[in-house]
Image 1 (tube, rainbow, N blue to C red):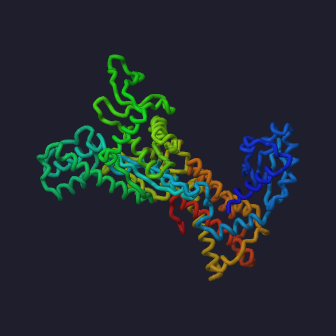
Image 2: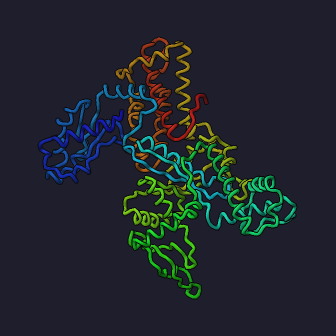
Image 3: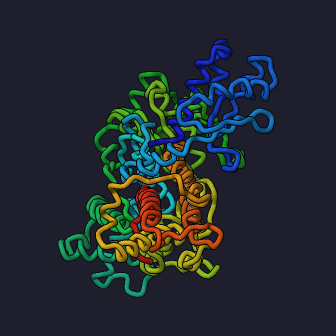
Length: 578
């Protein structure tokens, strides 16, 4: 039951059926909103219709509002309406609707909050896609968790979601990986004694097991091999091992992918060259010379003819290189082929999660995908800022086993995976954040993650206490209907917040902003905790009032359903006891 959608839909339909408004233009109706006011004391809902229609009707907003009140009052489920301020119409709905809402939550614990916004449309969400040259480190965590939560939100909103990882296993970085493993392989045979890794090689101990695997399998077969002989083999073994390492780390924070696509396979299968030919045949490419880069001295710059994409014709600031003078294709060419590949697999709607440092790349890939699909593809790119990791206000130390970065496992040695997941989506993706491991461990209301998880555990504790007092009655409660008549102000606030959940789910999905959900969860938890405040007037379990206690247990069960639903959508486990 989406109470917001129900009421707003009825109000908008009623307004458009009013004879006096028959001549109102469609564009004016587009500006009419029905929303939950920030101050719930003003009403359950509010609409700006009177202000929007002032220009169309040539009347004062309050005059229009007063004219509309009788019509809105006629809608089923509306208790009362009033005019406020310059012409806002505030609306309160009937107690029976709030009662129906609680009962609907009790009956639909898993599907409450689901919307049909997506309409079953297929969407591909690609995120993380860390180079397969080392373990997943904490710098990857925000994008990985953001992408996973977005996928869960899109599913909750009715999309058919596929989570994809693009393996950048082609090019210079994987050649360096192969050389680094080969150096470790030689080291196992006593070579490089006392030497340090060459400049540019991947440091850390994580490549030693890969080299050991090759030694155990092949012995000294590769010791005297040429570069052309060992690089392809070491590259294949090493990238495979790194991907297994990455997958294992991700499973520890409950992230798994549906599809893995290899850049190397795109190149070797001819898909990149086919994409370039397709673009050439359509007149999207030309051979030319780009202007001298800003800041580069004239004497240091040599104009070079390259194969260029007419990116400026599709909204970009400059044309972009597809292939260099040597004929070597660029990463951009592979990226176009990859996104076109997704489109041809049926994903007209695509979402990419990138680090904010790739922001300058957004326009060119959107331009290219629009060009090759005749603008039939919809690509949404979500940028997320870096996370500064601290402990007790000081930078968290790097891992010896990983080399020059902190692995996810290092963080999970300090906090559990749920805490990491929630903290990584608690702020807007485009906001830089500092994550202090010590503060994340605090068990207080100042720690929003603890506060949310404790709310669920507290609800569970209340229900267990009830079950101990009245054995067997908790199961029978599911046959009861919630009675709204005796609710206190705090309980009413909790019910109204629970009614907001579907709207929050839709808004978080539409805006690709999981932080909207985490903020809602904080507010919902705080309101639930306020039931224990001295001023609440609520005694959840009153042995002198079994009927009232039963009714309040239904409300606690409904809350538990909503908070559990939200935590699962964020990819968190449920803490039964804290």
